[in-house]
Picture 1: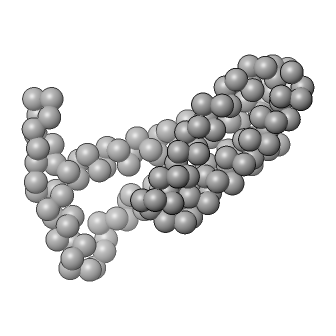
Picture 2 (picture 1 turned 180 degrees about the vertical axis):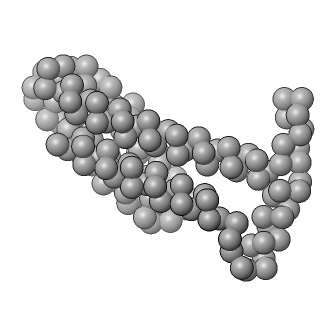
Length: 137
């Protein structure tokens, strides 16, 4: 059950992140609009192609959404598998915890409290599941 709650936290983060991505250009602030315009206009050569900073931003944002959804599914699947494969579940949860903890840290440093705290809650739930699985091994 802990991993399913963690999965729900990650889905919440993914939904909020996706909404933020979709609506990010709708600001009426002139300074924000100027920054967006510059991000869309300025291009840099990379890998034989020209890409704007907005394309980088959009691509990385979409990659995060995809990663979060994948983690949510994986946590749900591990939740199902943990009763008959506790050792494997235990091993699989550590790298997921590492990544979610990293998202929490970068959330506090570079973003804002909602995604950071959501990741902290998910991380604590995963850590509690790891502790429970460790006792079952």
